[in-house]
Image (tube, rainbow over all chains, first blue to last red; front, side, top):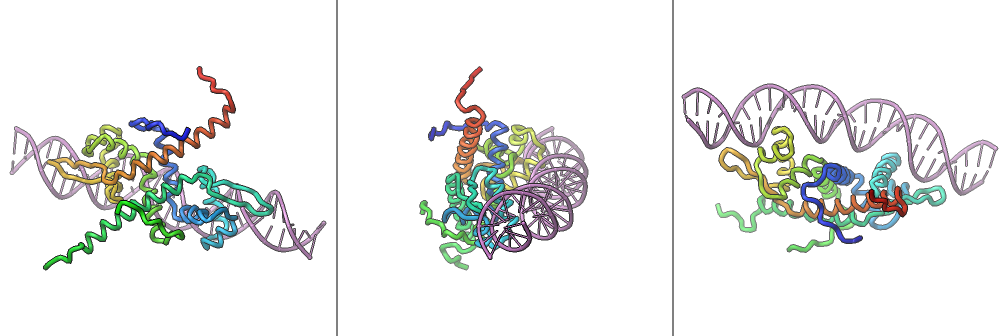
Length: 120
Length: 120
DNA sequence: CGGCTGCACAACAGTACGGTTGTAAAGATG
DNA sequence: CATCTTTACAACCGTACTGTTGTGCAGCCG
């Protein structure tokens, strides 16, 4: 089950929509921050709210979206609700994107400051 | 240089924004389709327009966004403009997301059909 | 039991984004 | 040179999303 059948090349429409939707879930800074914070371990809404300095409602809403996408798990504990990473694959995604961003930034910096100081 | 320095854990804000922006670029079905089509090789705007059945302006706009994100390259050839994948990393991303979607779908199907393969 | 804490849901305003229409620039064609 | 093709840009509209405000609900505590 861990092996991936190479995906059909002309991606079927429904799959395209699902993929795009999933990417869009990761396309908000607040949600990236939440996932990044949850990398340290499970946390309650209040802890996340405090860590990110955002409103409780906003944090709760984004956590709901992440949960709806199956990326985080929800667990009631006493009066609080504990969220945790449910799909570790998101970290690989983020890391890859970070790599891409770095390459892009490196390229831009290379343009601005060529390793060889431009002889005038 | 191909290896990635483990990214700082509390992701710095600007990096978070860049990552989110990059994810958002991939969060549109049309752009996924364009990248998927470009997987077969470089193509002009007209070819992509024909392959996807979308308007020329729309295709051009999305290609511009992909190009702005450094994911595709642009090359003028005669009267046409040829686009090609510039950052092959996007495919790994898409494949990983496809895997995630599959796991999710498998889980849902498992819930709907607990033990019955029921092929017709 | 009354009050307090922690979380989620609903409604709303502001904004961003996608798709369309119209048009202009660059190059081929005859 | 006139015209057709190919692409990009700008303006517009409708939709979707984000963040806030207000509120309801469940579980602790005195």
